[in-house]
Length: 146
Length: 187
View (tube, chains in turn red, purple):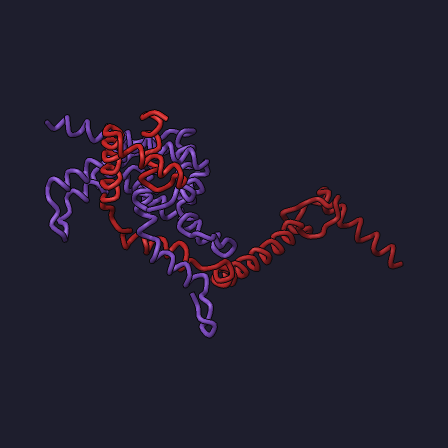
């Protein structure tokens, strides 16, 4: 191996991530090579500097935010208990309304050929078809009874 | 964790404990992954812990730390992919810049006496780290800041150990070059 190859192994050597054999081999080379030793020292300094970087702690409000999204978030059965009653009441009200609407939409049961009038039959002119229908149906009923 | 007599912890108690023990670690990691953008780091940690909460009942990883880092890494990668598909411009970019933890760090009054030179160096290292690509920044941070082994990093990043080894080395070499540039620029 030449210096280039050894230098590729220097980071792993510093992190003690080489096999025992390679670790010994690199150490042996460093004893005799000032260039690689300099490289190793430079990398060690970088490692130490990165280790020394101070980073902030987790902000308290972020902890609270996470807790509110996890620990204090109501499970589905709790939500069902809270929202269940109003949801049922709403569903019942909708059901009643739908029933009433359907009954009204069906309208009064009248014969399909019955004419529609605004005046009472007694006040209608004699030639009005409704008067004729009324009279006929009366006479038909009388006939049926007879 | 529990003595035979003690009552087993509920999911909520366990989660609360995890949040207390690993919250700072997750936040530090998120700050590094996102390159110091505080808003993104907060979102990442929040999404990460919500995911942990959802899966905690079903999954009990051997190493919680590794699992947590993997979740954060995957969430960030998903977000990057989404961003690449639908590029957006942040309306509060100026606010994010102004409130980054990096800037706050430089403004803070430290409890221990930290020399100007040291503080400057820390800022340089942070700046250089943020200039690295995520693929190099992640393994360097996981190794040097969080003390993970190459095997653990490979699991977090879902890549072979050999890749981790070369990325850490290349990341450090790049950091060295960047720090050299900053120093030359000041002279």
